[in-house]
Amino acid sequence: MQKIIESINSIINDPTKGAWQIERDIWEKLRHLSISDQFLADLLSTISTNILEKHPSMANLLKMVNDLWLIYEDKTIENKISSVKNLASKRIAEVGHRLAAVASNTLEVVKDKTIIATISRSGTVIETIKYLHYSKITLIVLVSESRPMNEGYFTAEEISKAGIETYYFTDVALGAFLRNDRFIKKPFTKDFKWIAVTGIDALTPTIFLNKVGTYQLMIAAKESYKTTIALLTDDKILPSNMEPLLGITSEQSSDLDAPEGVTPINFYFESIPLEIIDYYITDSGIYTPSEIRNKAINRNISNFLTQVIEKKKCQQITTG
Image (tube, rainbow, N blue to C red; front, side, top):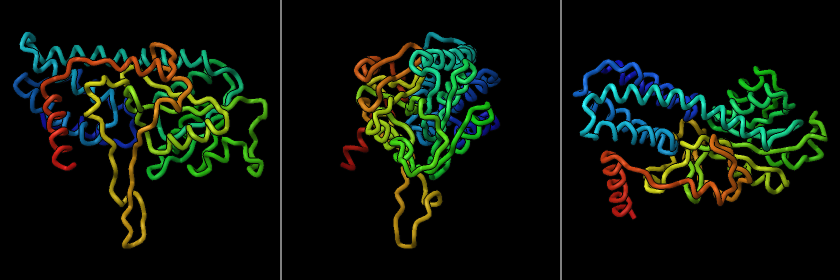
């Protein structure tokens, strides 16, 4: 079982993978489980602890943890390993269908001759942009570097390899590009429509979480009268009663070079108000901010996650 744990943890700890890629690859490992039911609790506990520590901002992974524990805790299920494997097969198929549906729905909003500005690395955004391109939509894509890990580099690389005209620039240049600063020499066609596009890690009734810098991109777009769009699958919408599980991770100073005696603050994610986005495009449709918040309905929570939530509440009371 140690090999399975190490294999899954390597997926969870891979900084190049987006949320749906992590989910898909974990389900793929679980689909081929060959352990007995008696070891399932240890496996789930290890996976869950790592996800809650490394990715507390990714709603689909939090839901994955919950679904797995609901199977384990259900006394009516005799063969739990078989049930986990069946759920894994179902979820793997759903990932592809959901991404395709998001991309298809985006065609209703994004028309020919569009300049897309985006940030960081979102598998949903990348797959949608490629889908638009293959649907004969003429695109120009602007990708900011997304420091300090520079995930935007890999986004720009993948989009460019698909044959799409792509430009890569520093995060601090976002505003200048979006307001068409006349001092910037750029080969962009004047009759193109501009939009700002982001992925989402988790969405609640009031905010969504994504890579730090997303708010800057969307504010710059709104100030420049550009359309703002968020792309997400419905499993990124977190039920209200699971919201206490959300967290924003920060990394060590090794990723941010600061002078001696200066303390670096290096948050990777930020919370962003729903109202900053014009259209939320999911696999089930296209929504306004007021419409999307109504989709965050409560769901059954496993005993495991209920205990996690209670511990977090106690810690908050103790520290604050």
